Image (cartoon, rainbow, N blue to C red; front, side, top):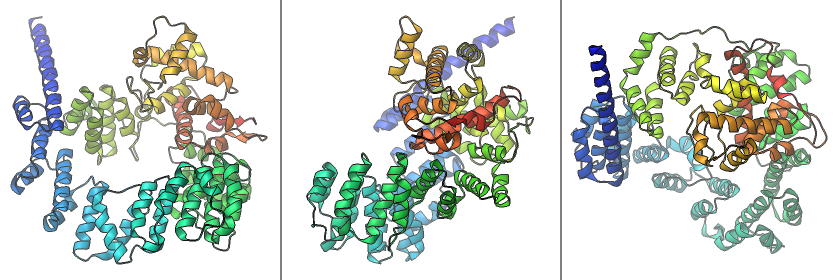
Length: 637
């Protein structure tokens, strides 16, 4: 008894000391963030034995990096070699070297860096141009052809390539068009500085087109003369098109004769794209017209994707196949388009060609991998664990410094830092190490890290870690009360929050089932919850009660179809209804693929994929529905 009491006392004292030091670390971090060198030095003395002391050393060195000698920097990099903090410091140092154009030292350190953001990447391109290496163009193009602004370190690179005409006049116009497509008028004006003076964008016209595109287009009549005029007119049409297909089309008819064949092809492609997202049956005609002009504007993969989706809704399988084959090689390898290409080949009775796609696709643990498996007549099954981590492996993983640092950050609720440290530590792990790390995270309640880490395995898997089922006793009783499918609810929670009880989204959704404040309040009233307050939503039981009630509500109002209810849970019941076809029945997979919101489309696929795995992990037997049965057939409006 005496030894037990002594151990208990030591445990309590140790815990109190750890909590005190955690507070000291948070204070040291805040001192670093505000640039208080003196205060940071004071806390560093208290934190000598803390697991995050390396970060305190990083803070101190980072604040003095401009004046610190090379030997001190190299000592830190060597001491913490292969740790995240060393890579962070090296990246910080490289940016200083690049800014100061210390290219010899930069060339030595850059190959040793791992995490490279765009600012650092452009300093690297500067260093290559400094030694007359003009082969950087292919690498720079991915940065140039973007609609958003780039770091200042990229400007000398772009300028050099423009003056040497490796970035051409047409390349400049292309980037301006990309920027205007996304409404980035500031970027467009900035890039237009590289145009000849006679072709510069007119800032007043561009502002007028942005503020009131309809009024601007009404004033044009026969005033479109230059390339600048045409680009601004097209920009105004795109602004209209974001809100109203018909209004934009009417204005298009008025000015199309003043545009080139190339420009007409471009706008018709965008018209088809927006119409397809609105499930407008005219979309395919506009796509075809865009591709049959004398000078065809090459459609992007994004535009071609919506041409495929429009063809799917109309069951135009020949067009599905032709359009997929026009995509870039990389895009064609995405599981989405491999599956639909195989389906189109089946319709054309080219079974061998279809099976050549479906067989390797069926081995992938994805939404379309499961559908491919069902096309081949194979039901999803999960074998016994191919690798079961031992207690010794878990204990050894717990002792790894990177894991300990990630756990310490998580303990202090510093989730971003915990995520970065964890991701860095596991980045080169074997399957066995990944599963051991996943088990550590599970035991610590870091369910998001447990799931994401187990998801990374290549050959040896543990699906009970990929598809965790915490809070099962509480959830099981609630889903029975509402007569909900437990596997589906788990699949939804896994996608919503990764089982982090107190997580809050940027939009304000809270808790396991990510409830918006208005939804939580409405459900609480329906349930007659006395004294409901928003801070109760992070409570696991409260959140599950509210979330499952709302899920049952949307399910019952949407033909009891999990597909529609999943879409409604993410984007609202009204949208889920509008996305049905006006007159036709829709195969559930086609409904899912043609959801116009990228987030909701991805969400629905993952929730239903998760449901399939949960049905097996939770041991619901072999009578659970297939994925195609879960997707069902969606009735017309």
